[in-house]
View 1 (cartoon, rainbow over the protein chains, first blue to last red):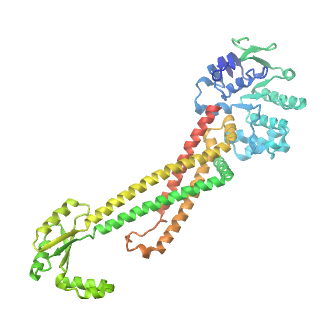
View 2 (view 1 turned 120 degrees about the vertical axis):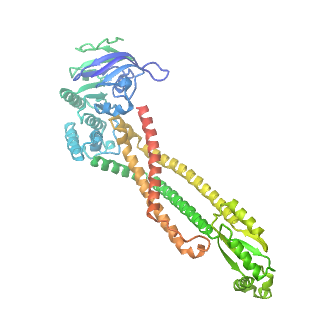
Length: 231
Length: 303
């Protein structure tokens, strides 16, 4: 599903953010990506949905070779990936319903169908009563859940969550993790970046530790990390 | 398909509503430019029609010596009429000319009263099948007319016509250049307005791109916005054209002596409205597409 071969990522004249990353994630895996702030967790995730381009190396995601990806193929790749951004990336001038339904709108679903599925999804994340509100009217946790609903609504092959529980209390964090877990049970490959050790223990999952741009194998992983480079 | 088209159209309207002042300014500019284009086109046509009208009716004025006898006059008229390019001639006797002079000089009655018909040279208007632009043959004809005895002078009005034609060519060329400059300036204006509209919704474009929106999906509302501008611009242009046409009709009496009325001065024709719409649509869509491609390329490069 996701394969990295000697991937490097560096910004202009700076120390590489990611160095020689080689890993493989199978379909249906639940993977935590952990590490301290600035370690390169978000960059690793951004490489997967092509928000960043690798400086060197080969990347394969859902059958797309990202090293040779044509510009016209980027939307196709991204439709297979749901992303919960660290800063939510919600549209402030659109209602919760419109924000969540955006993915379906892009897929060309009829308005009625969009409304039905959006309402169901928002019920699932506990925001059925906030359907006509605007993101600035919601709390951080609620915005987080709207972002999660938008990422999950089209049942993507891969779900990426960058610090999805960063703004939530422990109860809401647990509920969010349950939602990710349920998506994973339905067959979605989930990648979740976090530095919350306690949270990682709640779900049996694979784990990629990133430290200063280098990945290393976690302690309890029955993983298939081929040629994993240790830091 | 229809639903998504309607949705992107409504998004375009929303986008338009967000910057309606700018949109109105752009539409008005488009309308004014389209109106100027049609007026320039119509005026050029009108001038050319007028010049063509005159071209059919420019005689060479042949003045005979006043002392030419009546018999000689007939002979000269026959000689002129027999020249190959001459189609017809009109003879004005000194007496005819004096009567005409008296009829048109009512204010100078005293002065004209003492004029003697014998002092006025007889005049022959020579009409030819030559085009006024055909300078060589005109010259040849003039030389032939000069060779006829009793012909004192030959005045060729086609020279004035040629000067007017040259002037109209210069004016037309200037008009075309002005239209091109105006079109380029408007293209930049449309492009910048779309750019501002896109900048104000950059976050939306960024998010749409991140969740898999195709360039066409992202661009659709802005393309609709440009289409609405072109419709508004066309409507404004039609209003201006209607105004100018009404103004012209009111002043027709004033200018009909100077311009040919063979082709009526109509600005609000189906052809002109189509021209206005095509101009507004092509200009706004070209400006919009150029900016959308640039902004989306930047967006792709950033994300």
